[in-house]
Image 1: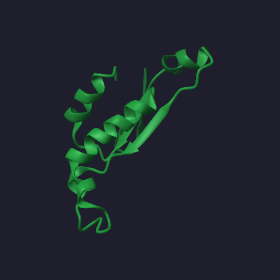
Image 2: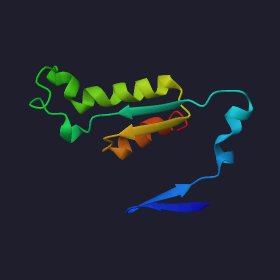
Image 3: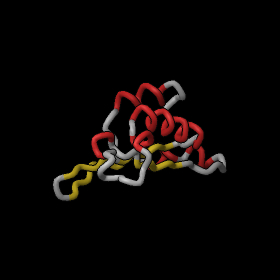
Image 4: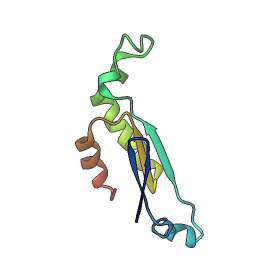
Length: 96
């Protein structure tokens, strides 16, 4: 496994064989990238036209998990990801 550096970031280069199983079987690899809107950024003053209920994490969190599970993704990427435990617990129940 090689390590590449760019500025102050370190990237691990994973051999391509790790990701070839589904492709070798002729199946597409499904990737989902989801911006969850970090809870600390979901403020009514920032989103004045949004119903305050949809900005509440207790409303959004479970719906995001449902949407991700329904996508049947092989790889999930989250942006503005703040609650690791929430997603880890919920997604582990589905094999992620």
